[in-house]
Image (tube, rainbow, N blue to C red; front, side, top):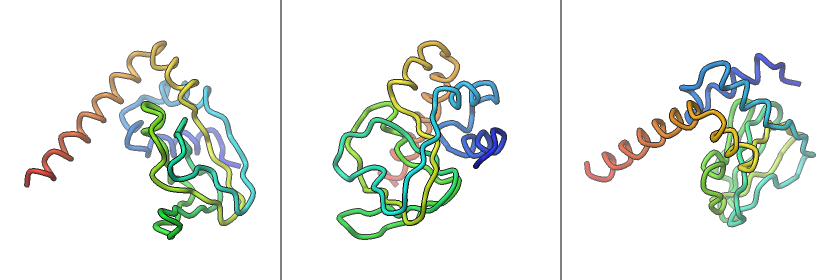
Length: 141
């Protein structure tokens, strides 16, 4: 099981959260839940409505698009961060290949935290703007 310090370090590595202070990361961790999944479980399914984010703490899972394996996720990898904000459909299925433990954060737990802690919202908006600028640059060059 990932220790509190380890979980915060993994959370800090997520680009959406990398600008957050330790205190802000601890607030996110407080509203998140650790969930265990058995081997062979689809954590999320391609095309389904997304309601949250998962940070893999232990285990291994495969990313499948159209039923084809595209990537392998391990401790420290994550998926679903955009679903925290927009609830859009999943672009892939993530299926466990071993037992997996994730730190799961739902939009209904996360969005009220943004209302309560505007500094988190501001830093996430800055990261989203940076991503949009990079995307625009890549499309025009």
